Image (cartoon, rainbow over all chains, first blue to last red; front, side, top):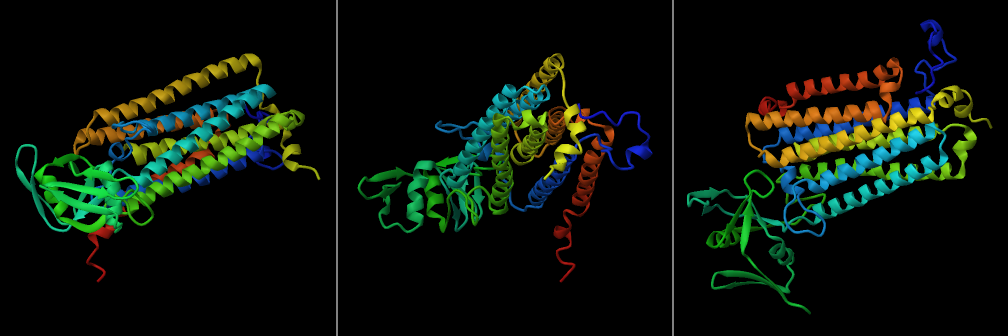
Length: 326
Length: 125
């Protein structure tokens, strides 16, 4: 597809200067070697993630348990949203390759149309990632840690003991008021009404949440709901240490902060690539619209930014597997 | 001022064209790769939902299946979407070889030294 002017040339002449031994323009070559170095950066990040995870002494959260919400819907949809994001990115990669193909036929209208579609796809992905981040930061319902050992029974009635420091997860409704309670909001009052534990938030509108059930092992294998007397026992054994959602210092998903930090850094670094990709795509779209490439006689610029855009898709394929699936 | 990126290598850039008929064939291939990539992603998500995680050989096999499917996806993106398959083989090698060597080195170093900090805990006091 690229220049074939190197055919039937001796290797001495080929590498002797004055021509590209690779048979491509240097602009394209620079893009390729930039992408190789960028791939090494992402390779290093994902390796560091795998290393931290394999060497972790505490259980590591799993993707299906952490990422299972869909915007505006109740219930659990493990990894469906991330799969949707992957699909959006694949489709925008396809529209980009169609723009490159149109460029090879010097089809100005085709390039403009497919570049526009690619930009829209990129913006959809960025929006999805913003929602994902927001959901991750706000979290489920928060957790508290046990200050002393608690013995509860499993579904078969067998007794077992949860150790000090075990995280216990609240449901969304109760967790919302518990956040105010944990932060020392004097409007939130804890009531124990004949064994029914309630948090009541006084104010213009009074909110009330009852402790129905608590969850253990929420983000790892073997998630289990605990209700009734056992739930009250766990609540009574709580320490001062509450965690809600995630930030740069603490997170409710894992006992180790590196989990949240890797999420922020890897998806954030990828998201920044998507953002700059969209900006570059817009510039190329406007240039195509003005007829710059038509005057130039070729649409190689579309091919170069196309390489960058496909690379973003390529990285996401690996992030999807190593961060979310495995 | 002359833009050297437009002048010197113009032949390479101008040669990168194809006819309408060739375009039809290329677009067909693009659709094929799209369907394949989407199908692989759907299979991966379905596998993740169906098979329960556990410390078993089954899950171990599934993990390696995920890695293999990812490499297939990556191969199609690089070779088809990024047109590396159509470039000269010297370009292919100089892009892929450094990366393949890097991966092998990293696998080796993490597999052999990765747990060092756990075992050598007391040796340096």
